Length: 192
Image 1 (tube, rainbow, N blue to C red):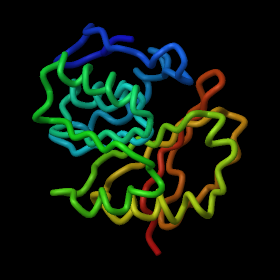
Image 2: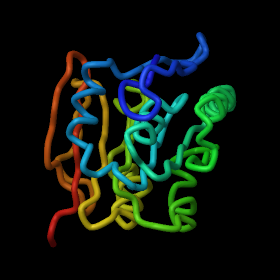
Image 3: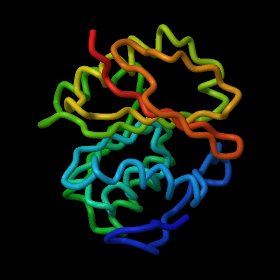
């Protein structure tokens, strides 16, 4: 896995350990997603939830994000994430939240020094297939919506077979793209 563009273009990243459930986003899909997000990244604040070893958040930093908050539960994966952050020398632009995202996200978000411009929600595909959407809405998407900048986006990646509501709290799907087996939904705040 490599950074696709920006300050660290071409730099290699550690991937998940072999026993981890790997679901890396392909280069073409990543290029398309970040092409859509470029205006939000310059000097932006980003969260990368279910981040694995940090591919999306580190790409965002490389493309100009000021800071990224990474959230991951698996201890070995968090260690690899920290190695990637150190290898790029971006420790001052990265914060790692280790723990269960639905259980701890609201508390983590309360400590943010600024609103988020982009929040990636990138769970393992099989986990997202089993999500109870009302529970995820209240524990993940509503807290994110409350900490988004006015024009901020929540970017949800799932496999294309996963049925996702068009609205999650105050967020609605503004754009949807499908790449092979995955679908990426861009949620934005909707007027009441």
